[in-house]
Length: 425
Image (cartoon, helix red, strand yellow):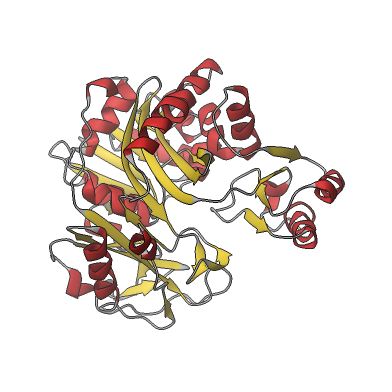
C-alpha cells in the first residue's frame, strides 16, 4: 500500500513514525514534510494547501490512501477534492471540518444538542462586543471564530483587557479574517484534559487522555502557543469523568453532526475542562492535536492503518483500540522568542544520542537540512518535541527532561514544568 501524509509538523512526524510500522505500507510519502519525517517518508515539495497538485500527485503515483494531518487543508476542503478525484482519504469533509473551522458553529451545535459547554455570545461587530462587555461578568474568554494556529484565544481578567482583546481580534486583525467574528464566553475553571477520538460517521472510539500546556512560560504564564509540551494519560481523567463524557459529550457530538447532515469521518479532538459542575467542552479540533499526538501514538498498540481504513470504510465498531499501561511525556524545544519573533537556520546537535534509544523519541516540528544534506537546522518557533516513556508519569517526565538536555541549538527554549500537575494528582 502506498500512503501519502499531508503536513509538515511534529504531529505529522509522529503519524509518519506510526504509519511506517504498519506491515500494510510499502511506500510512504509526506507533503511537504520536514527534515525529521525524511527518515520514514519521501518528502514531496508540495504545500498542504495546494489541493489540486496534491491530488494530481496522488493519482500519478497511484497512492492508495492519503492522511490529512493539518487543520487548514481540512477546513479548506481538501478531502472533498480528493474524494471527487476518486482517491481514498482520511479526514472530515469541508462541511464537517467546520466543527473546528468555526468556533461559533461549534458553540451553536453544542447549545442546540445540549452538549455541556461554557455559556457564550457571538459577535460580528466590534461595537456590539464592547457593549456586551460592559455588563459581562469577568473574567471572560475571547475566541477568534476561525483558525488561528491555536493562538486565537484570549483570557481577559478585567474590562479594559477584554476591550483591548476585542480590538486586537476584530479591528487590528491580529489573526486576519479569523477574527471577523468572535465568541465571548464565560471563563471556566478546573483541570484541562485533551481526548482524541477516531470517528467513522456513526461510531466513535476514544483514545487515551492527554494534557497540553499552551502558555509559553513556566507556571502557565506568557502568550498562548501551539503547545509547549504534554503528557499522557491524565491522572485527572477518571473513570467517572470518562463515563460522563461518553454519555453526554462524545457520541452526542457525532450524532449531532450526523443530524445536521455533516457526517464526520476522521479525528475529533475534545478539549475538556473538568469543572466543579462536571466536564465541559472547551473546544473541538477536527484532527490530531499537536503535541498530544506525540504522547498518544507511542502508547497505541494498534496498527494505525487498520484504524484509519476502518474510519473511512465505516467499520470502526469492529476495532478494539488498545493502549499501553505506561506513560509518556513530551517536552517541546522552541526557539527563544516564540511565538512572536525568533531566529531560524540554527544548527542542531545531540540528536544522535536519542537514535535507536528504546523509549525515547524526537519528533521534528520545525526543522530543515543544511546544504550539506545531513546537518539539521531550526526552521520554526517550535523546533522539536522530545518524548519519553516511563512506567508512570513521574518516570516519563524525568526521562523526557533528561533527553531534552541532550539536544542543543542556539536560543533553545523550553518550559521546565511540563507535567508538574502530576505531583498534585
